[in-house]
Length: 202
Ligand code: ZN
Image (cartoon, rainbow, N blue to C red):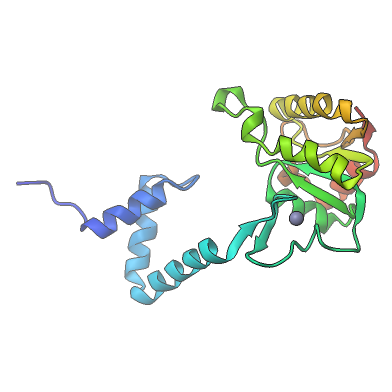
């Protein structure tokens, strides 16, 4: 006789939950059982939100930030932004952190991560070619690198600076004062403000 287990749909959802970052078998089980305990309405709401995510959210082909499908990018298409300064960040969430600091009014470029030989993330996995194309196309005068202050972030910054040098554009990075080993998510808005205003040439 096979060992008793959850019905297949529950097992499937547990499996899906487990594939999310930071969720292990026990957390996945707890979440799924909690949803079952709340009746089908909760599960239906969650399903609807996930479908909307898939159907309505896209990525701006220019900056890499999120857009609602079929609408213009609120950052790239805004005429209130300074188009000659481009700030390079690792993740879309970093754009919001910089926006909330109020320290930057130029354009953004989301790389989609950083170089990491251990995780097999190479330059072709990041939006580096797109960056090199945008600089001359927009007439960018300064590229600010706002990447993590850890080994991989440093390596990525150096790689980008070398790639951008032939384009004759000024490349700067955030000032010291960023916590070593941390990304922008470890920094409060004031520190971010200082790090941006005290940026230095690479
Ligand atoms: Zn955009």
